[in-house]
Image (cartoon, rainbow, N blue to C red; front, top):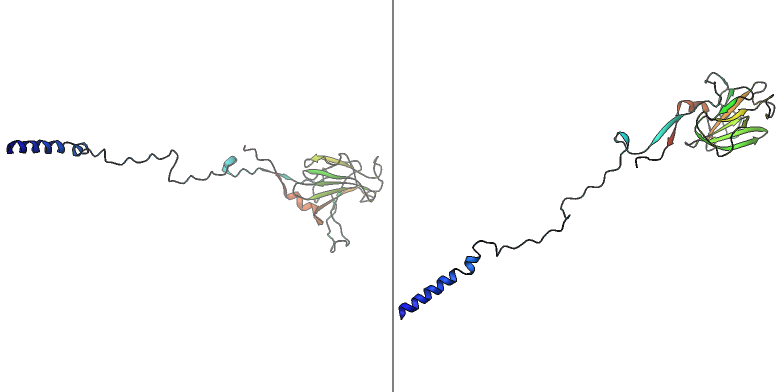
Length: 213
């Protein structure tokens, strides 16, 4: 009887030894399963987008330089300058607020720089054309007869008027430089007068639309 009991106990022990312990011997059942990480979640920061670059790897700010030219074709300062700029000591004091360029009655007068015609008419009995340039400067030309209306956009060297003077049909008679004939070219920034001849060596910066797309 005692031998039978011992045999049953041995069988029971062996059966228990091949259960859960054997099942977990591979280490798979008890290992925790990590939660799946959502797609696109990364620890590395996302770099900011680099600014768009234009041609040559430079920032896409387009521009074009266009130089000023004498408003009387053929004049090449100092050649052809009848009277130079002489700024007044006071705002309303005596002086010469521009330059006089030699010309002939009826001769073509051109825009000294790219711009828009903002005035064309008579001032104190003289024909005047005023052009506003992209850099904020304003050129006034007199005595002239306008050949384009207000609002016309012109390039540097584009025709805008003809010289007014004695013997020219449409002229007012006496020239600004009587008895000779000339064109007075004045330049202002706001209410301040500048020497127009200094512009002939300086470009006008014209901003263009960004076409880098």
